Image (cartoon, rainbow, N blue to C red):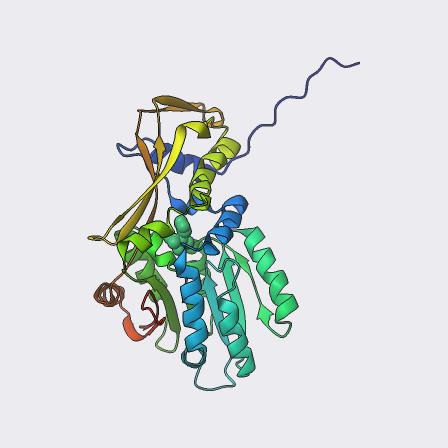
Length: 327
Ligand code: AVI
C-alpha cells in the first residue's frame, strides 16, 4: 500500500481578486469592492434579498415597469418598426423585471436581439433557460462579463442599441466612479441609441436602512459571503463567529454604507498569498455603497456624463425612477 498522502489542492485564485484584497486590506480604513459579492453563492443570496419584505427596490421597479411598459417599450425601440436593434442589459441577473419589457417588445413585433450581460455565469445560464421556456421567439445572446468588458463589447457592436442598466446598480459606485462609468457608457452612444438607468430615490431614511439590515439576516449572509469567498479562494481563515454585519444610511450624501465588523482583535492568514492581516477590535471593512438619489442629482449626473434626461418613469409612491437618457 502506498504511504503517499494526497497533497492538499493548490488553491487557484484570480490575480485580480488577490491584488484587490491586498490593496483593500492595506488601506488605513480597510475596504473591499462589492463587485466581489457576486460569485455563484452571492448571486443566489442576492436573489433571496430581492424577495425580502424590507427590500423594496426590486418590487418597486417591477411595479414601475409594469405600469409604464407600453411607454418604455415605445421609447426603447427605433421609430422604424422594421429596424433591428440590440437590447443590451448590464447586470441582467435573473431578468425577472426585464421580461416585462421583453414581452412588451415581442408583442409589438419589435425586431431585436436581447444581450444580457452579467458577471455570474450561473445567473446567466438560469436566465437563458427561463427565456427559452417562456419566450421561445426571443433572440438571446448572453455574455458573461464585468462592466468594463461589457462597455468594450457595446462599443464594438455596430447597430442601434438600447442599453438597460436597471435595479439601481448605479448606486453601488462611488460618486467619482459613477461619473466615469456613465461617461464611458455614454461615449459610444449615438443620438439614435437609448439608455434606461434605474435610480433608487431618497425617501424615509428608516425604510432605506431596513432594506439593508433585514430581520431574517439574508443581507448579513450576503455580506459574510465575501469572507467565505476569501476563505475559499485565497485560503484565508476568517472566523465568521467574530464578525458582524453593520449598515448605516447617511441622508446628507444619500449613501447606505455596509461594513463587516471585527468583534475582537484578530489576525487573518491568507495561505494562498503567504500574507496575513491584523484587525483591531471593532475595526471594520467597508464592503458596499448603495447611493439613493434626488432628481436634481440625476440631472446633474447625466449632464456631466454628456447625457440629457429625456423622461423619468416612477412608481406610484415615487420610491424609484427608471430614467431615459440620451446623448
Ligand atoms: C445590486 N445592488 C443594486 C443592490 C443594492 O441595493 O445596492 C445590492 C444589495 N446589497 C445589499 N442589498 C442589496
